[in-house]
Length: 367
Ligand SMILES: [Zn+2]
Image 1 (cartoon, rainbow, N blue to C red):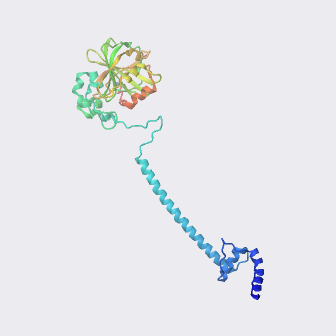
Image 2: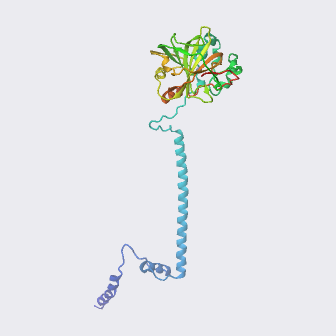
Image 3: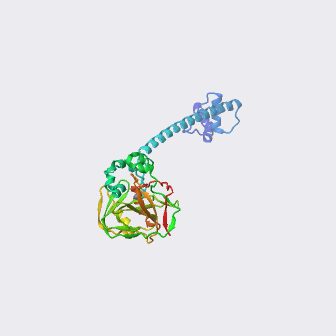
C-alpha cells in the first residue's frame, strides 16, 4: 500500500511538468552530457538567453568554418560552370563553321560564280574581233584565248599575251576614251536603216552578243556600213566628260572595204526596254552555243530619238585592239530597267576595258 501511494504522489508531481513542456516526438531532445551541450540545448529550447564568451567564440569558429566551406564549394562550382561553358561555346563554334549558311526567306545568299577567266571560249567566233575583223581574227584566235577583264590576263597584260595583241600596249589610238573637249561642228547626219530581222544570241564568255540577219545599215559621211553584231558592256566603257554610265551597247558595223564603224548607245537605269528583254529571254544556257530566236527584232526601236553624236577614231576594246575603228557615240542615252541590268550583271558584273589615253586625238561632236 505504501508503495502504491509513493507512485501516485510521483505522478501528481510530474503531470504539471509534462503538461507545460511535453517532449516532442519529432524533435527528440538530446541528453545533456557536457556543459556545452547543455548550453546548446538551452538555446534551442528557450532562446535567447545570455551566452558565455567561450561558447560564443566556439560558435563563431564553427560558423566561420561553415562559411569557408560554402565559399570553397561556390568557387569550385563557378570554375566547373566556366569550364563547361567554354566547352559548349567551342562546340557551338564548330557547328556554326560546319553548318551551311542560313537562307533567309526572299534572300538568296551570293553564290560564287567562276571567274570569267575560268571560261575558255571554244573559238573566237563570238568575240568583237572575229565578228568585226572577219577571217583575220581567226588567225589570232589563240592570242585572245587567255585574256580577261580582271586578275591574271587582265587589260594591263593584254599586249603581252601575244604579238598579235601588240596594239593593246603600243597603240596610240585605242578605245575606250573619256570623251571631252570635242569640237562642236555641224556633223554629217548619222542615218540608220534598220529593219525587223531574225537574230541569235551568244554568250561569248566575255559578253552577250546578238547577231542579226543581213540588211541592217548605217550611213555616215557618204559611206554605208552593214551591222554585223551588237553586244553589251557593264559598266559603260566610254566616259563623257568623266562621267560613266550603267552600261553600253556597241553596234558593230563593217563596210565593203572591211572598215569598221561602232555606234555606242549609252545606257542609264530607268524604264524597261522590250528589245533588251527579248535578248535576255533568249540567253543561252551554254557558252558559244548561239540560241536562234523564234521572233524578229527591229533595232530601230532601240535607238534614242536624238541623232546627235560624238565621233573619234579608235580601236576594238578587246584583244587584238585593232585600230582604225570609227566610233560614233550617241549623245542621248537610252534606258533599261534595274532588273534588266541585274540580269546582265549576274553573268558579267564587270566587262569594261579601262579608259585609254586620248593622245591628242581629234574629237568632234554635234552642235
Ligand atoms: Zn564592245
